[in-house]
Length: 147
Image (cartoon, rainbow, N blue to C red; front, side, top):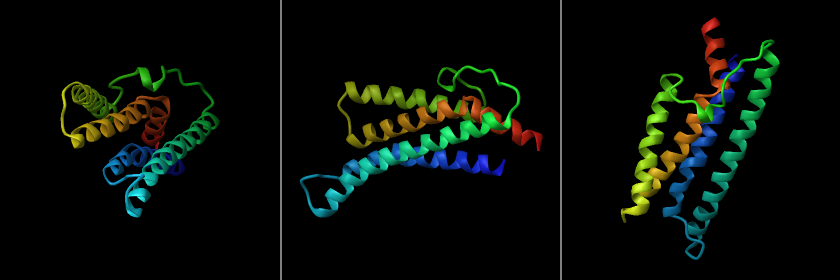
Protein backbone atom coordinates (compact mmCIF):
# COMPACT_ATOMS: atom_id res chain seq x y z
CA UNK A 1 0.00 0.00 0.00
CA UNK A 2 2.73 2.44 1.00
CA UNK A 3 4.57 1.56 -2.20
CA UNK A 4 1.51 2.45 -4.31
CA UNK A 5 1.09 5.73 -2.45
CA UNK A 6 4.75 6.58 -3.04
CA UNK A 7 4.41 5.69 -6.72
CA UNK A 8 1.42 8.03 -7.04
CA UNK A 9 3.50 10.78 -5.43
CA UNK A 10 6.31 10.17 -7.94
CA UNK A 11 3.82 10.29 -10.82
CA UNK A 12 2.37 13.61 -9.65
CA UNK A 13 5.83 15.11 -9.01
CA UNK A 14 7.11 14.10 -12.46
CA UNK A 15 4.04 15.50 -14.22
CA UNK A 16 4.36 18.71 -12.19
CA UNK A 17 8.00 19.11 -13.27
CA UNK A 18 7.04 18.38 -16.86
CA UNK A 19 4.18 20.89 -16.88
CA UNK A 20 5.97 23.73 -15.14
CA UNK A 21 9.28 23.30 -16.96
CA UNK A 22 7.65 25.53 -19.57
CA UNK A 23 8.55 28.49 -17.31
CA UNK A 24 12.18 28.04 -18.35
CA UNK A 25 11.18 29.53 -21.70
CA UNK A 26 11.75 32.96 -20.14
CA UNK A 27 15.39 32.20 -19.33
CA UNK A 28 16.14 29.99 -22.31
CA UNK A 29 17.64 31.13 -25.58
CA UNK A 30 19.50 28.84 -27.96
CA UNK A 31 21.39 31.81 -29.41
CA UNK A 32 22.18 33.56 -26.10
CA UNK A 33 24.76 33.24 -23.36
CA UNK A 34 25.78 29.87 -21.93
CA UNK A 35 23.26 30.03 -19.05
CA UNK A 36 20.47 30.83 -21.53
CA UNK A 37 21.42 27.85 -23.67
CA UNK A 38 21.47 25.60 -20.59
CA UNK A 39 17.97 26.79 -19.62
CA UNK A 40 16.71 26.23 -23.15
CA UNK A 41 17.93 22.65 -23.23
CA UNK A 42 16.90 22.05 -19.61
CA UNK A 43 13.33 23.02 -20.49
CA UNK A 44 13.07 20.35 -23.16
CA UNK A 45 14.82 17.72 -21.06
CA UNK A 46 12.68 18.42 -17.97
CA UNK A 47 9.48 18.43 -20.01
CA UNK A 48 10.07 15.12 -21.79
CA UNK A 49 11.85 13.36 -18.94
CA UNK A 50 9.12 14.30 -16.46
CA UNK A 51 6.44 13.18 -18.89
CA UNK A 52 8.12 9.87 -19.76
CA UNK A 53 9.10 8.95 -16.20
CA UNK A 54 5.70 9.98 -14.85
CA UNK A 55 3.77 7.82 -17.27
CA UNK A 56 6.27 4.93 -17.03
CA UNK A 57 5.68 4.83 -13.27
CA UNK A 58 1.95 5.13 -13.98
CA UNK A 59 2.11 2.01 -16.16
CA UNK A 60 3.94 0.12 -13.40
CA UNK A 61 1.32 1.35 -10.90
CA UNK A 62 -1.46 0.10 -13.17
CA UNK A 63 0.17 -3.34 -13.48
CA UNK A 64 0.55 -3.59 -9.69
CA UNK A 65 -3.10 -2.65 -9.22
CA UNK A 66 -4.19 -5.34 -11.66
CA UNK A 67 -2.01 -7.93 -9.86
CA UNK A 68 -3.36 -6.97 -6.42
CA UNK A 69 -7.04 -7.24 -7.30
CA UNK A 70 -8.94 -10.41 -8.03
CA UNK A 71 -12.06 -8.67 -9.28
CA UNK A 72 -12.20 -6.35 -12.24
CA UNK A 73 -13.15 -2.79 -11.42
CA UNK A 74 -15.46 -1.39 -14.06
CA UNK A 75 -15.11 2.30 -14.75
CA UNK A 76 -14.85 4.63 -17.68
CA UNK A 77 -11.38 6.05 -18.39
CA UNK A 78 -10.46 8.99 -16.17
CA UNK A 79 -10.19 11.31 -19.14
CA UNK A 80 -13.97 11.16 -19.72
CA UNK A 81 -15.04 11.24 -16.05
CA UNK A 82 -15.59 14.47 -14.13
CA UNK A 83 -16.02 15.37 -10.45
CA UNK A 84 -15.39 11.81 -9.16
CA UNK A 85 -13.99 12.98 -5.81
CA UNK A 86 -13.04 16.21 -4.08
CA UNK A 87 -9.47 16.21 -5.42
CA UNK A 88 -10.68 15.58 -8.95
CA UNK A 89 -13.31 18.32 -8.59
CA UNK A 90 -10.60 20.86 -7.73
CA UNK A 91 -8.52 19.96 -10.78
CA UNK A 92 -11.55 19.71 -13.07
CA UNK A 93 -12.51 23.30 -12.18
CA UNK A 94 -8.88 24.42 -12.50
CA UNK A 95 -8.71 22.74 -15.92
CA UNK A 96 -11.79 24.60 -17.12
CA UNK A 97 -10.55 27.96 -15.85
CA UNK A 98 -7.00 27.57 -17.19
CA UNK A 99 -8.31 26.35 -20.55
CA UNK A 100 -10.55 29.40 -20.86
CA UNK A 101 -7.68 31.74 -19.89
CA UNK A 102 -5.37 30.01 -22.40
CA UNK A 103 -7.91 30.40 -25.21
CA UNK A 104 -8.54 34.05 -24.31
CA UNK A 105 -4.77 34.69 -24.28
CA UNK A 106 -4.51 33.20 -27.75
CA UNK A 107 -7.25 35.47 -29.09
CA UNK A 108 -6.51 38.67 -27.17
CA UNK A 109 -2.89 39.85 -26.98
CA UNK A 110 -1.72 39.63 -23.37
CA UNK A 111 1.36 39.28 -21.25
CA UNK A 112 3.48 36.20 -21.96
CA UNK A 113 3.64 35.41 -18.24
CA UNK A 114 -0.14 35.02 -18.08
CA UNK A 115 -0.16 32.84 -21.19
CA UNK A 116 2.66 30.56 -19.99
CA UNK A 117 1.14 30.29 -16.51
CA UNK A 118 -2.30 29.42 -17.91
CA UNK A 119 -0.76 26.91 -20.32
CA UNK A 120 1.27 25.23 -17.55
CA UNK A 121 -1.76 25.09 -15.25
CA UNK A 122 -3.89 23.73 -18.08
CA UNK A 123 -1.37 20.99 -18.85
CA UNK A 124 -0.88 19.97 -15.21
CA UNK A 125 -4.58 20.09 -14.38
CA UNK A 126 -5.31 17.93 -17.45
CA UNK A 127 -2.87 15.30 -16.20
CA UNK A 128 -4.37 15.48 -12.72
CA UNK A 129 -7.91 15.36 -14.10
CA UNK A 130 -7.12 12.13 -15.93
CA UNK A 131 -5.36 10.52 -12.98
CA UNK A 132 -7.67 11.60 -10.15
CA UNK A 133 -10.85 10.62 -12.02
CA UNK A 134 -9.36 7.29 -13.07
CA UNK A 135 -9.53 3.77 -11.74
CA UNK A 136 -6.01 3.74 -10.26
CA UNK A 137 -6.72 6.63 -7.92
CA UNK A 138 -10.09 5.11 -7.02
CA UNK A 139 -8.32 1.86 -6.16
CA UNK A 140 -5.74 3.71 -4.05
CA UNK A 141 -8.42 5.52 -2.04
CA UNK A 142 -10.45 2.32 -1.53
CA UNK A 143 -7.40 0.46 -0.25
CA UNK A 144 -6.67 3.33 2.15
CA UNK A 145 -10.25 3.22 3.49
CA UNK A 146 -9.93 -0.51 4.17
CA UNK A 147 -6.85 -0.03 6.35
